[in-house]
Image 1: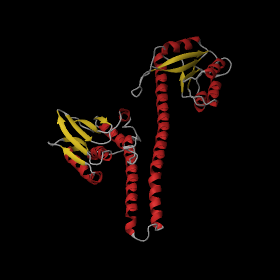
Image 2: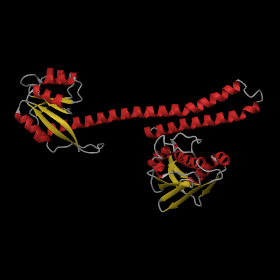
Image 3: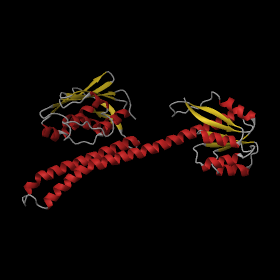
Length: 377
């Protein structure tokens, strides 16, 4: 259980001991919290004593009486503000007045509670403060993580785009300077390589946009009944030029009509990534088998290849963002490192699972299991 430090500053012993008893074994729960939050209560009789405690250890909440012997509560509040302490202050006093309430609020007091107060009133005030503090910290955490993700995206984007841009620029300079004479046929290979690199850059940008849409929840989904065998065949056909280039045979095993309620575009993205990887990371003259079958209420899709395979430690990080398996066999294969992470994020929307079996030098098999009876909204 997480514990917040709470300081009670009041010259009345009954108030100090009362707050301690009320909050003893009391905890706050919230739907988004991983665990309940309890309180470690400390007490101070004077403003000077409160300042010593605040200087010595961080506090999360301060219940502060204004009418104190020595320096007043409003002076303690002013010190907290001057030191920019990350603490929520609630003024509790029987000498409540509009002027004091306005002054305390202007100086950063979160709330103003007159005493005497009931245990229920105190717990309600502390619960509200705790939830507000939790939400604020979560927002700050998401902002920090958001900046880190944006920085990571920009870093990867600039790194991945720099090399192909340099290559395309180099080819264009050679053509501009007519390095191989005036015969256009001499430059066809350069044009082809440039187009290949431009396509790689386009794929990277589209992958990054897909990740952004999925994680932001802004991607519009159209859930309908789709025929999986047809989409599998469409995906295989779209990668026929690549399979011919790699001399890889791709086969579809789908002996029955299998339907799934899903977003057609999402399923196409899943299949395109799995099938294109099976071709790209295959051996020349290899084979890819795409199989689709139904068992009870489960739809099982498998994409198996006879390619270069992977080590066990590579499989464990395969679905993380920007992960690419680096080896002697993959150094000349282009990719964003986002394809399989996109697949995993999309499958999570369907509560579908994906499993990988692979052996180096022998090939890999990706198996996806959908729940056919589930409606995916």
